Image 1 (cartoon, helix red, strand yellow):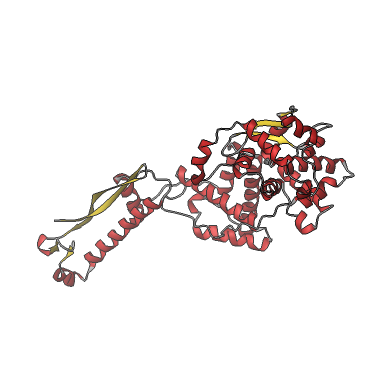
Image 2 (tube, rainbow, N blue to C red; image 1 turned 30 degrees about the vertical axis):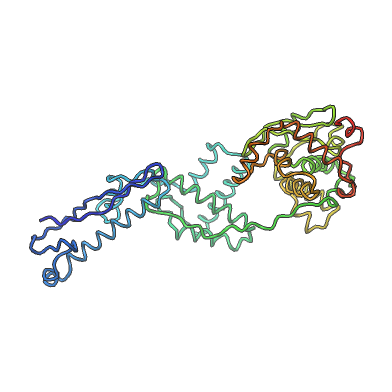
Length: 404
């Protein structure tokens, strides 16, 4: 008789698991008298004469099959586990079939993706930096990296190569994240063996995030820069700190800026999730900053440097060096929440934040318009004692009268 035994075949489709049995032919033959149907192995008497050879061969094949099943279950690129796919992986693992993977250069693949990929300038710059570092790694080790040979050992070696470079933790984490993403894309194309995975070694730890309080913002607003570059940076600082918008929405805010009866505002669609329509009030500092025209908006990285330089003129260096565009968004939200008169749902509608699952029911009943929400926000802020905002004048009395 032909020696065969059954394996549980796992088929996953649309998140559901289905189970049925797959019969595996081991390629071995044995007399029925020498086969134990209960244990699905040769009888002890036969194994004693055989020296356990057939028993061990069956054990090895069973282990290979289980590893093949596990590899397909763990793969994020396999939507459905079919009999054909399982047999293909099993034959590769057992050495019956050899893979014929293309030799695809890791460096060239990343460079091609950057050239053809639809991504932001910041993402493009990050991938270019990764490609440059991989090029340095190849020169140092006098080797060329190919996807079909890219293993966990190579990945770990690259991460060790980064250690003496004194890079920021965020930079090492970004390199690792980008490289794993490229590896997964190559695997999806079939340039990496299906059973191969990368385990991330460097865990990202978010650094404590600062925000500028009312006093620190007031100090920057009172500062008079001497250069045109810093004067432009101060305008952008004022807009970001007094509206809480993201850098990606700066140009949208400026392009849609309008003068209203009670207050000036900007109505636009946010660039990021949840991609909602926003109506931002322009408080007095923003109106004053935009009196003589819109500022020039440099690229994000350049603006962050300018904001640090501006803040270093009036704030301690340890604080100034951490300032970025997103620091000012965080400052806006933190400062207005600290006033304790602005409800969270009003502020969330201003800044475009989504509510958690537990608050969505409440938000579903909040039917006030964007303009009404903005009007309530300005009215609440205008009623706050200026001392609580470090003396910053947000709304003039005449505007307060017009709103009422």
